[in-house]
Structures are given as structure tokens and as C-alpha cells.
Image 1 (cartoon, one colour):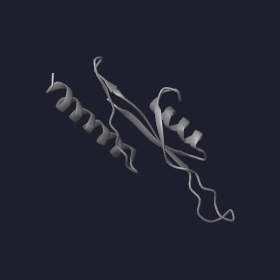
Image 2 (tube, one colour):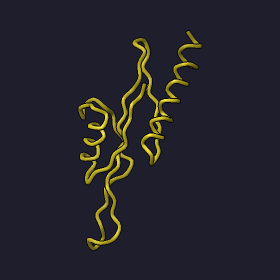
Image 3 (cartoon, one colour):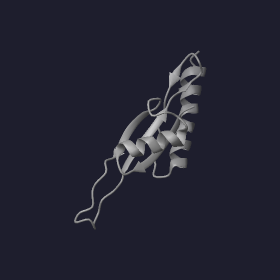
Image 4 (cartoon, helix red, strand yellow):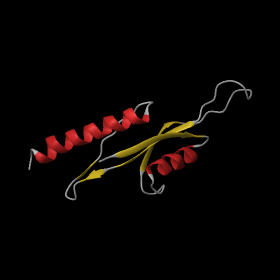
Length: 98
């Protein structure tokens, strides 16, 4: 089963640490993707945004290993999408072909 978390932070490192903490893993245990780099505000007032990263871990049945990804603004929706895709992949590509 894949587990993933999408978090934001002032820096990419801070966002990655927050996502790993949410998953209950060390930063070296998960893979990550930068979804959005941080931007500073213009004139200290306008615009700007936090860094956003997605951290994920892969699934295994002790013979095969696979991973799926779900991305959404809503972490629950993204996780649900990844979970459904993981079960679908497992059933169609591993159970039916073995």
C-alpha cells in the first residue's frame, strides 16, 4: 500500500520534513517530489507562496514492489486515489497474471 503526504513549508526542506513527520518516517526513508518552490513576497506585501512537496512510499507483497501516486489539493483525496490505483494494479497485474 502506498502512503503519501503533501505538505507546505517556508522551504523545500521544511515541507519535506513536515510530510515525513505526517507519515511517521525519517526523511531518508521516503521519496519526494517538489510540487511548488517557495516564492518571496514582492515588496514584502504582495504574492509569495510556500514550498509544496509530495512524499511517498511504495507497496509490496514480499514478492513484488510497486508504487502509485495520487495528487490533489486535498491530501485525503490524493491518498484515496493512490490507494485505489494500488489495489487495481495489484489485482490486474499481479494476481491475474500469476
